[in-house]
Length: 298
Image (cartoon, rainbow, N blue to C red; front, side, top):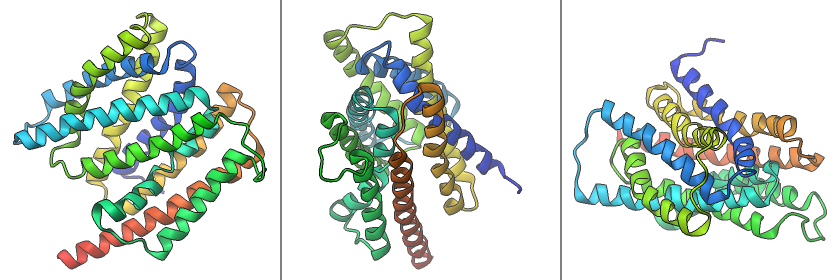
């Protein structure tokens, strides 16, 4: 099968995202969540600084710049503080699928925030996805309390709400994505530095810590984001390209099992299949609605 440039870029992004759950867990063995986030944010800021120096400069307004700076308090500050803490409390094979339900949360929040209506396909997808969440957390013992950290589960689900708010807000900021990210990380770094100093202290700048910072900052927050955004901008089929994202949690589960040696309950694979099935239905309906909207506009 022939793969064009957008497919290769999409696959590159998926491969990078597939490694980050392992990177989170390994990095958190050596640093606290806030230290790992600070280190990663430093590397991300350097990357996006290089991007804006190479890219054309758009037209700025105070409103656009202010919105982009405020977005930085949501992502990376709030979102990744919550997400890294969840990964610190939960096994990676549990935290990762929970975090992937952000697309379902986005569909739910689009109702009050954007005035959209939930179609039957979307509702079915949401139901299937959250059936997977319940199965993942309970391991099939529905009448017993889960043996995972309740706070960790709550934080993993909260991260989906924060990311959904970020995504819905960021699409209204009419700036190139790399500029939005640069302004966001520029606003976030002073806040993260203060949090790091007062809560955990600046981490030692060892090669190991720097390596984890580069892993998180460049793969999770940087290069993967740039590859995916560029792929989306040049693809001839957003629908087909979007299907590649479902490879990420599957590859990640294999890496978690083989590298972290986490004992994975058999229900986790079933739960992941339900989550991905639900996401597929939700995303498919979103693509159909977007296509219909474009036809009306044209």
